[in-house]
Length: 116
Length: 111
Image (cartoon, rainbow over all chains, first blue to last red; front, side, top):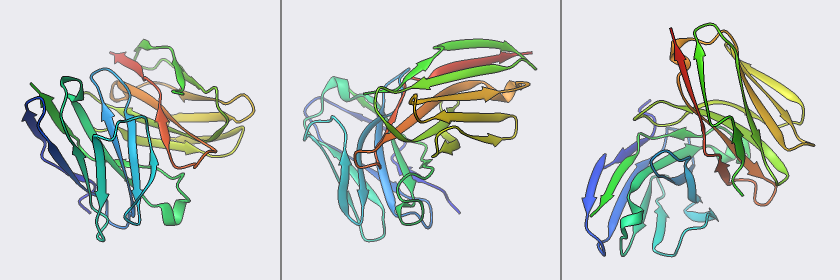
């Protein structure tokens, strides 16, 4: 079992650019959540996808958007990048179908985004 | 609102015990505990769904007081491998599927 995978591992962009981050959930999982983790802080919830729909959203602007594909993999898109978007972006997968949404989440290694 | 964790940091000697607390101003549906080592992804430790229920994982256990909206993580006979940042994640009743993490408690175990 490959676990949760994310790509790329590191990314450097300049202000105003757009970025797409990718996540493949753990085998058997159907739910993907995205988090932003600034240095020294806890993960901040961005949104969660299940059945290709956004189920929940945190306090992030519309510049942050996502998508889930039929194979449960997911993308996080960020438009008009700001310096403050520099962070570690974590993807976590879980199984809504078996846990009712309250089950454990498995985190991927993250994508380190640096905005210059 | 983000759950509040205390203490912010703790230093232990190998074999000592520690308690990390997590409290929320909102009614909780579940509490999750994770440990994150430097440069790595958070790793799931345990989840608590019922008020007052304790769960254990090796020498790490936790309790969840649903009425007080508080959870505590107990680390007994700490080992060097316990070093890291511990996060509590709280899921409330509104939607139930959004986990909000605390700022973390940094734990350092020295020999």
